Length: 144
Image 1 (cartoon, rainbow, N blue to C red):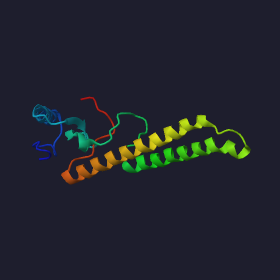
Image 2 (cartoon, helix red, strand yellow):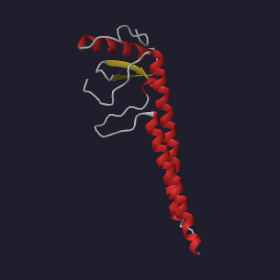
Image 3 (spheres, rainbow, N blue to C red):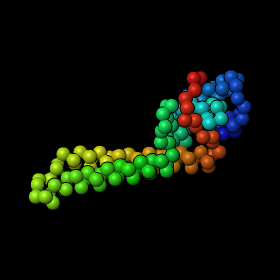
Image 4 (cartoon, one colour):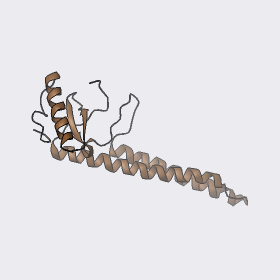
């Protein structure tokens, strides 16, 4: 039993999915914030919001792991640093600063903050799933 849902860690098929859906609806009626989602092995699972982490439903490559988001934060940080050089660069030639490049600075800093926040969310969700013995959610969306 996982998350108070009997049979949520074994089985598959329509009867199993119906059982998980029923327990999920019951949890929602008690006021719990839960999301019904498929696991990597294809079975249905009712995840608490903090257990789900960063889930994408796309066929395109997506960032989902904490390490991936930290790499993304480094890239955004590089954009911010480069944009500061763009602003200050013309002053070495006696010209006015290129103030328009500050837009890139703001975008880069915002990207760093977003990526770090998402990395923390992904890391926390992964830790919670490991502690609670919950399977990994799938990156693919199935029609159920």
